[in-house]
Image (cartoon, rainbow, N blue to C red; front, side, top):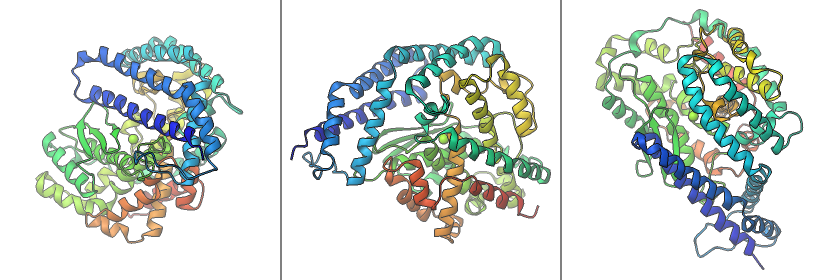
Length: 511
Ligand code: MG
């Protein structure tokens, strides 16, 4: 039986996979070790590589290979290409074609000229945004954002949609998600979280100085690495480095780089950053043997990817059980000043809930509300029901309504995030989805392994890691986010798990 198309597509797929990792390596180096003046040629290098990847994806050879592979799908077992690729299972083969179909479909809908206009507008836009944020002047950024917005609407129209132009943008980051599903989910979250938040704040204790202690960078790094070691972060397949904004970059099937940043007088920045990125890293290192090196070896969606980092950072990393083990070590080996601090005071400090203006510094309870604000505003901007002139005021009113606080200037308001200047409309919701997925998965883990937190109290994470690998990591993109969520928890994504978690953690403990 002929399998020419299938063989050709597997080869193209693997080459695209390799090229993308080369591009990631250039990007990782840019954010970590590249000298500042290297940027000009680096931008050119990355842009050239991305063009080559795009050409490969949209080439006639790829289109033909995909068409043939579709015909060959039903008729035979996958031939092994001299041991070069692991044969995929029938379910994986279907997913493989689905993903290639999606990739080609999206790529062929977007005109080349639009891609380069967006690329130019966002590259100028990012520079203008940085300046505008510094000067806290939205007016400075407004004409550039207007241009980006017009192009983004054009992009949405090119991709096509049924209900709202926001849907195809959202779908880029969270495949399968639509406003029809998302809006009620977020409304439910807001309706229930707001009254809880009020109660949590009134019973919350003031900030304790115990987190603001001198803690040299090297010692923080050592502590962070001990935690990574304990959760089984594989040092022969991963690295930890420093960058301005923490991130995870995958450079190969056995090469994941995570970064963090160090504040020498406030260690939670680095430590929770490390635990967060490790969650992303473990996901990328955990894809199943057959799908490694293919289009399926990726997170299902940004929401699911973020669920892995939030799971470790918040649900495990801020849990009493976690610090039952690590607090004595922190005190003994790193911060003797903590000898005077009761464990409960420390625990409340790392779990302090307090509305704040800046999203990236928000606690786990108020964080999703920052996202709801952005979702409402960017959806209205894309749908053209909110004008840019009214955006700063709408932002400030929204902050007041959702969090009860009001920015004093646009630098700490509407200008704080880089995303819109990058044209990344539809990205923000994935942060909140990550939290909701994580809560739902955490609840399933506790149901299936009721004693798992006792292991965590002993500094052991084998059950947690294996459970995540088996239920989330190995599958890569084989199942959709919705299918994965149902498989794990028996139901579609629901904000009730997160709300329940917040209630139990913050409102049922005696103060
Ligand atoms: Mg993240």
